[in-house]
Image (cartoon, rainbow, N blue to C red; front, side):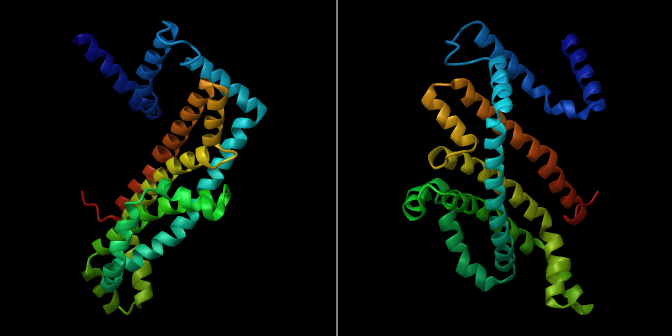
Length: 268
């Protein structure tokens, strides 16, 4: 017991000095267990390669330029689809949040289509647009859209009407009230919607690339299945998880916390 307490105190001191280590330490037991399973040959190595095999595959595919090209394709597709989703979702969410009539007319439709999974649209999109970039972009837009609309609407409606009246009484126009009162007040919720939407969109992109794509990380994993290369499938999974962890933990989460402190009416 004392040994565990001593180890824990050392961990706290080290992570206090180097906060980035907090992101790495939880993965160490997983890597140890993975290494032990592969070294003890619990499963044939062709079915479960070890971490070193994945690292070697990473170096090989990066040197050949395959991994970097596929990763670039996936990121660009997500960026394009997310941009369209944000451009549609935030204005629609603001409109739904400000107008009770629009909310009554649109809300049932939003809940109905939100319940239809993005992958459920793939068969009909393939009939309409074939195995094209348009199909993948529409799936991402569809996936990103609903978390943004719903969270933006919630954020807009959470802004006190007293703030609206105060701004109007000071001579602000309705557009200025939206820009300087409503949007800042709704920004924490908008960031939450963006964070969730991008996470869902990333997963939808990989699933779509597996079915539709001719490049990208999802395609690389599915193509590796045909060759029986489990190490490339595991590499794709590691790359996907690592990339999203970095983006979410080091970019999106800090922005979400900052907006909550700045505009979320947070009190000490």
